[in-house]
Length: 216
Image (cartoon, rainbow, N blue to C red):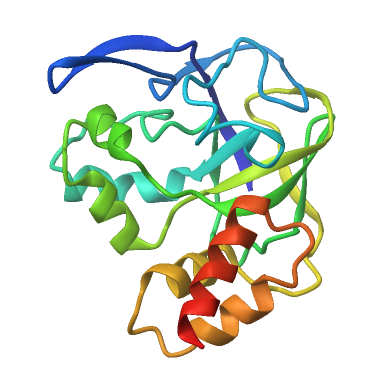
């Protein structure tokens, strides 16, 4: 895996359906070393702190490998790194082989995978397609949120290495599909395993507990 782009933004106010909202989704690539703190990347801020940011969602990574699919699906050849709101655009970032609890080394940083990304309506605004949140969920390729284990500088072009594998080996994609795909045969077993993962974000631990209780 390689870090192809680092993308940041400050919150921006926009008009949406007759009201003014603030969003940090409009990420733009930046050059030079960028410092990663426990909360976010330097000069990158989240607008909606209820649903974004925090310890378990300090950094969001998405695969550059998904871009050709979405350029074709959305009939938009202009999609560029950062358009999905990701801080890190990484080649080979495969949700089907990366697990909750995996540790990734990038530059001076060590980052821990904590949960899949669940899109909101702002993703539709970013790509100019109101159906995008639904399409994103149906594709199951969500990228992943990361917790910062070790702060430090990262730089575009750096190698991204998995230095530790999550003990329970629940992939980001399998967890996301287990939660959202009602026809997925192994959903229950995947969720039952996932709730045991200490590195899983508290948000997803609660979501899974509620979902599992409804199945009893």
